[in-house]
Image (cartoon, rainbow, N blue to C red; front, side):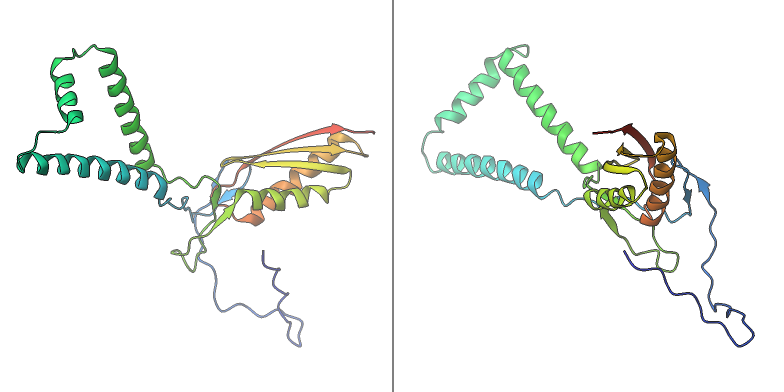
Length: 220
Protein backbone atom coordinates (compact mmCIF):
# COMPACT_ATOMS: atom_id res chain seq x y z
CA UNK A 1 0.00 0.00 0.00
CA UNK A 2 1.34 3.43 -0.89
CA UNK A 3 0.63 6.60 1.14
CA UNK A 4 -1.74 9.19 -0.23
CA UNK A 5 0.05 11.92 -2.19
CA UNK A 6 0.55 15.25 -0.48
CA UNK A 7 -1.86 18.06 -1.43
CA UNK A 8 -0.62 20.28 -4.28
CA UNK A 9 1.16 23.48 -3.36
CA UNK A 10 -0.72 26.72 -3.87
CA UNK A 11 0.54 29.87 -5.52
CA UNK A 12 0.62 33.38 -4.05
CA UNK A 13 -3.04 33.99 -4.94
CA UNK A 14 -4.07 30.85 -3.09
CA UNK A 15 -5.04 28.84 -6.19
CA UNK A 16 -3.95 25.26 -6.69
CA UNK A 17 -2.05 24.61 -9.95
CA UNK A 18 -3.88 22.80 -12.71
CA UNK A 19 -2.33 19.38 -13.49
CA UNK A 20 -0.76 19.06 -16.91
CA UNK A 21 -2.15 15.58 -17.51
CA UNK A 22 -5.55 14.15 -16.84
CA UNK A 23 -6.47 10.52 -16.49
CA UNK A 24 -8.63 9.51 -19.46
CA UNK A 25 -12.20 8.93 -18.50
CA UNK A 26 -13.79 5.57 -19.06
CA UNK A 27 -17.37 4.46 -18.72
CA UNK A 28 -18.38 3.34 -15.27
CA UNK A 29 -20.74 0.51 -14.55
CA UNK A 30 -22.43 -0.62 -11.39
CA UNK A 31 -21.04 -3.87 -10.07
CA UNK A 32 -22.08 -6.09 -7.17
CA UNK A 33 -20.94 -4.65 -3.87
CA UNK A 34 -21.86 -1.06 -4.56
CA UNK A 35 -18.57 -0.18 -6.25
CA UNK A 36 -17.79 1.18 -9.68
CA UNK A 37 -15.98 -0.67 -12.44
CA UNK A 38 -13.84 1.86 -14.30
CA UNK A 39 -13.33 -0.34 -17.33
CA UNK A 40 -9.79 -1.54 -16.57
CA UNK A 41 -10.89 -5.17 -16.27
CA UNK A 42 -8.30 -7.89 -15.89
CA UNK A 43 -8.29 -11.59 -15.16
CA UNK A 44 -6.49 -13.95 -12.84
CA UNK A 45 -2.98 -14.97 -13.92
CA UNK A 46 -2.73 -18.39 -15.50
CA UNK A 47 -1.07 -21.15 -13.53
CA UNK A 48 1.87 -22.97 -15.04
CA UNK A 49 0.32 -26.35 -14.02
CA UNK A 50 3.77 -27.81 -13.43
CA UNK A 51 2.64 -30.73 -11.22
CA UNK A 52 -0.12 -32.06 -13.56
CA UNK A 53 2.12 -31.59 -16.59
CA UNK A 54 4.96 -33.44 -14.86
CA UNK A 55 2.65 -36.31 -13.87
CA UNK A 56 1.22 -36.69 -17.37
CA UNK A 57 4.66 -36.46 -18.93
CA UNK A 58 6.04 -39.08 -16.52
CA UNK A 59 3.21 -41.55 -17.23
CA UNK A 60 3.54 -41.10 -20.99
CA UNK A 61 7.33 -41.43 -20.79
CA UNK A 62 7.21 -44.65 -18.77
CA UNK A 63 4.60 -46.22 -21.07
CA UNK A 64 6.44 -45.16 -24.21
CA UNK A 65 9.82 -46.44 -22.96
CA UNK A 66 8.33 -49.80 -21.89
CA UNK A 67 6.55 -50.28 -25.23
CA UNK A 68 9.58 -49.20 -27.24
CA UNK A 69 11.89 -51.54 -25.31
CA UNK A 70 9.54 -54.47 -25.88
CA UNK A 71 9.22 -53.68 -29.60
CA UNK A 72 13.01 -53.53 -29.93
CA UNK A 73 13.31 -56.86 -28.10
CA UNK A 74 10.77 -58.47 -30.47
CA UNK A 75 12.66 -57.06 -33.49
CA UNK A 76 15.83 -58.56 -32.08
CA UNK A 77 14.28 -62.04 -32.07
CA UNK A 78 13.15 -62.29 -28.47
CA UNK A 79 9.56 -63.12 -27.46
CA UNK A 80 7.21 -60.32 -26.47
CA UNK A 81 6.94 -59.45 -22.81
CA UNK A 82 4.34 -61.25 -20.75
CA UNK A 83 2.54 -58.02 -19.77
CA UNK A 84 2.06 -57.08 -23.43
CA UNK A 85 0.73 -60.52 -24.37
CA UNK A 86 -1.69 -60.52 -21.43
CA UNK A 87 -2.84 -56.98 -22.27
CA UNK A 88 -3.44 -57.89 -25.92
CA UNK A 89 -5.33 -61.06 -24.97
CA UNK A 90 -7.49 -59.19 -22.44
CA UNK A 91 -8.39 -56.48 -24.94
CA UNK A 92 -9.24 -59.07 -27.56
CA UNK A 93 -11.29 -61.44 -25.39
CA UNK A 94 -12.99 -59.34 -22.70
CA UNK A 95 -16.47 -58.00 -23.58
CA UNK A 96 -17.18 -54.30 -23.58
CA UNK A 97 -19.49 -54.53 -20.56
CA UNK A 98 -16.82 -56.23 -18.43
CA UNK A 99 -16.25 -54.66 -15.00
CA UNK A 100 -12.55 -54.04 -15.57
CA UNK A 101 -13.21 -52.53 -19.00
CA UNK A 102 -15.84 -50.18 -17.57
CA UNK A 103 -13.56 -49.25 -14.67
CA UNK A 104 -10.65 -48.48 -16.99
CA UNK A 105 -12.88 -46.42 -19.27
CA UNK A 106 -14.26 -44.45 -16.32
CA UNK A 107 -10.77 -43.73 -15.00
CA UNK A 108 -9.56 -42.65 -18.45
CA UNK A 109 -12.62 -40.41 -18.93
CA UNK A 110 -12.17 -38.82 -15.49
CA UNK A 111 -8.50 -38.15 -16.18
CA UNK A 112 -9.37 -36.63 -19.56
CA UNK A 113 -12.01 -34.34 -18.07
CA UNK A 114 -9.57 -33.30 -15.34
CA UNK A 115 -6.91 -32.40 -17.91
CA UNK A 116 -9.41 -30.45 -20.01
CA UNK A 117 -10.55 -28.46 -16.97
CA UNK A 118 -6.94 -27.69 -16.07
CA UNK A 119 -6.25 -26.56 -19.63
CA UNK A 120 -9.28 -24.24 -19.83
CA UNK A 121 -9.18 -22.64 -16.36
CA UNK A 122 -6.57 -20.16 -15.13
CA UNK A 123 -6.14 -21.56 -11.62
CA UNK A 124 -4.33 -19.55 -8.92
CA UNK A 125 -7.59 -18.93 -7.07
CA UNK A 126 -5.67 -17.55 -4.08
CA UNK A 127 -4.75 -14.46 -6.12
CA UNK A 128 -7.16 -11.59 -6.77
CA UNK A 129 -6.40 -9.51 -9.89
CA UNK A 130 -6.16 -5.74 -9.50
CA UNK A 131 -7.43 -3.06 -11.85
CA UNK A 132 -5.05 -1.95 -14.54
CA UNK A 133 -3.99 1.70 -14.38
CA UNK A 134 -5.16 3.93 -17.20
CA UNK A 135 -1.64 5.04 -18.15
CA UNK A 136 -0.25 1.48 -18.21
CA UNK A 137 -2.89 -0.99 -19.47
CA UNK A 138 -0.36 -3.81 -19.89
CA UNK A 139 0.59 -3.80 -16.22
CA UNK A 140 -0.87 -6.72 -14.29
CA UNK A 141 -0.87 -7.14 -10.54
CA UNK A 142 -2.58 -9.49 -8.10
CA UNK A 143 -3.23 -9.52 -4.38
CA UNK A 144 -3.15 -12.60 -2.20
CA UNK A 145 -6.45 -13.41 -0.50
CA UNK A 146 -4.80 -13.76 2.89
CA UNK A 147 -3.22 -10.33 2.46
CA UNK A 148 -6.54 -8.80 1.46
CA UNK A 149 -8.22 -10.42 4.47
CA UNK A 150 -5.52 -9.04 6.78
CA UNK A 151 -5.99 -5.51 5.45
CA UNK A 152 -9.76 -5.72 5.80
CA UNK A 153 -9.45 -7.17 9.30
CA UNK A 154 -7.21 -4.31 10.39
CA UNK A 155 -9.74 -1.83 9.02
CA UNK A 156 -12.60 -3.64 10.79
CA UNK A 157 -10.91 -3.60 14.19
CA UNK A 158 -10.55 0.18 13.96
CA UNK A 159 -14.33 0.60 13.97
CA UNK A 160 -15.51 1.77 17.41
CA UNK A 161 -17.29 -1.05 19.22
CA UNK A 162 -15.64 -3.95 17.36
CA UNK A 163 -13.72 -6.20 19.72
CA UNK A 164 -12.70 -8.88 17.22
CA UNK A 165 -13.28 -9.49 13.54
CA UNK A 166 -12.97 -12.47 11.23
CA UNK A 167 -12.72 -11.85 7.48
CA UNK A 168 -13.03 -14.39 4.69
CA UNK A 169 -12.27 -13.21 1.17
CA UNK A 170 -13.67 -15.03 -1.81
CA UNK A 171 -13.56 -14.15 -5.48
CA UNK A 172 -16.83 -12.21 -5.50
CA UNK A 173 -17.67 -11.89 -1.81
CA UNK A 174 -16.20 -10.76 1.47
CA UNK A 175 -17.72 -12.27 4.61
CA UNK A 176 -17.11 -10.38 7.83
CA UNK A 177 -18.05 -11.48 11.34
CA UNK A 178 -17.48 -9.09 14.22
CA UNK A 179 -17.92 -9.19 17.97
CA UNK A 180 -19.48 -6.00 19.38
CA UNK A 181 -18.25 -5.01 22.83
CA UNK A 182 -20.14 -1.75 23.16
CA UNK A 183 -22.39 0.57 21.14
CA UNK A 184 -25.56 -0.41 19.34
CA UNK A 185 -24.90 -3.49 17.16
CA UNK A 186 -26.93 -2.02 14.30
CA UNK A 187 -24.84 1.16 14.28
CA UNK A 188 -21.67 -0.90 14.45
CA UNK A 189 -22.85 -3.05 11.54
CA UNK A 190 -23.56 0.02 9.41
CA UNK A 191 -20.19 1.59 10.22
CA UNK A 192 -18.38 -1.69 9.63
CA UNK A 193 -20.05 -2.20 6.24
CA UNK A 194 -19.13 1.35 5.19
CA UNK A 195 -15.51 0.92 6.30
CA UNK A 196 -15.14 -2.42 4.52
CA UNK A 197 -16.66 -1.03 1.33
CA UNK A 198 -14.20 1.86 1.43
CA UNK A 199 -11.28 -0.46 2.12
CA UNK A 200 -12.30 -2.78 -0.75
CA UNK A 201 -12.34 0.25 -3.04
CA UNK A 202 -8.82 1.14 -1.89
CA UNK A 203 -7.63 -2.37 -2.72
CA UNK A 204 -8.45 -1.58 -6.39
CA UNK A 205 -9.66 -5.09 -7.16
CA UNK A 206 -10.66 -5.76 -10.75
CA UNK A 207 -13.99 -7.13 -9.56
CA UNK A 208 -15.11 -5.38 -6.38
CA UNK A 209 -16.56 -8.06 -4.10
CA UNK A 210 -19.89 -7.89 -2.33
CA UNK A 211 -19.45 -7.31 1.40
CA UNK A 212 -21.57 -9.29 3.86
CA UNK A 213 -21.38 -8.24 7.52
CA UNK A 214 -22.63 -10.11 10.57
CA UNK A 215 -22.27 -8.88 14.11
CA UNK A 216 -23.06 -10.33 17.51
CA UNK A 217 -23.13 -8.75 20.95
CA UNK A 218 -20.45 -9.96 23.34
CA UNK A 219 -20.60 -8.94 26.98
CA UNK A 220 -18.07 -11.36 28.47
